[in-house]
Length: 160
Image 1 (tube, rainbow, N blue to C red):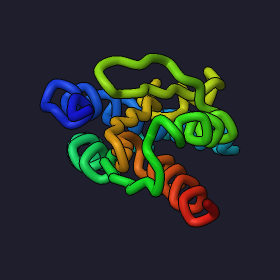
Image 2: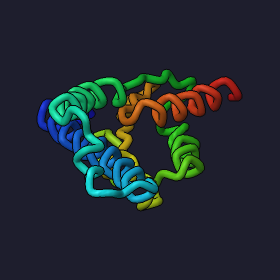
Image 3: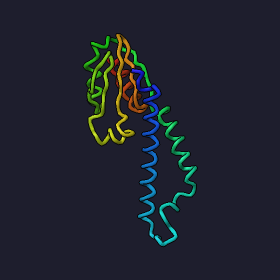
Image 4: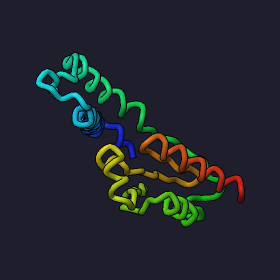
């Protein structure tokens, strides 16, 4: 469960974040360059980047900070035991577009069904790990998905 926040995993996420922001900015610069009407000899692709060292520094800073703020772990208390709620939780994940990828040592791992969406989630960083014990579920993964899923599980608990 805690493997999502160990240093090797964090370093991989930092590198993926740097690669992702670099590719995104390069794509935007290509659009600007090729869609601009003035393409005389003075305008080159590299002239669009005024301060490359500062841009590289921004990419590195983004890569360091983004994984820290975008991956979370959240606990949800259950009214009933996990074994009684398991089918409902699996249905919630299925309705959100996730499929069960594996189960090991009390941890369920879910992945997105759509390969395109998985790729867009920071190059396949879409796994959500659900650790369970009786009366409690711990979810870890991308912040927006975790908060959305925990709201659904809490809503399920209120309507029992």
